[in-house]
Image (cartoon, rainbow, N blue to C red; front, side, top):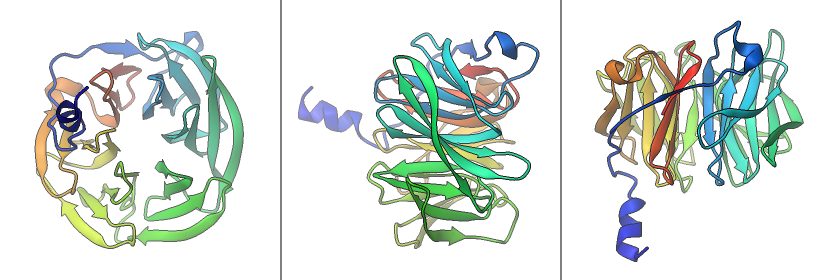
Length: 276
């Protein structure tokens, strides 16, 4: 691939266009008495897809046809997932009394629970960059090391109950994108915690999750507006509305873009299928 075409492919503000879609059931045999709820989706460098199923308390590995080929169970409700290394992911877990980060390895198409560490606060979102974990707790964002050591509180907003819902980092870690669900906005922070931009749009109501593509593009899902919006890399303006309620069919709560396959995978509220 020449330099010019590579630069075009990796343009973070290149608009993603929806051409066609399909649904794929994420249930395994023991799930069919209940509904799945895919709260996190992660694409590995190998192309494998790992999803977090909150209601069944399972992390699931999908093959190229989006069939579940392996799973492992965790001890609580799953809220988010992120890629750590080429064969490892981390998920945020909550039960009635505790919160934790659970690491899971992927080897020979098998998922295996590894180490975990407890948290002294509530937990929702998780993101990773070069050995640094960013963990959100509904009203604050924390910086952790991979061994579970808390480094510092990065950001806090106590003006509501869900002001720091989830977060992701830009592809070169010079931006932190924070979901403020209560106030229907996407915040962009610098690494030194300076608020750079606040994105608000009538089509973004109760944002639930955000995602940064390999190229650096930013996607954000509106729960009650039933939309997926692409925002520019600065987090300042809308580039396009990727999907509306006629496309996603339900409330989108997780999204992941795979640049190698040119696909977007969406998890929806209390629906067992993912939308590809």
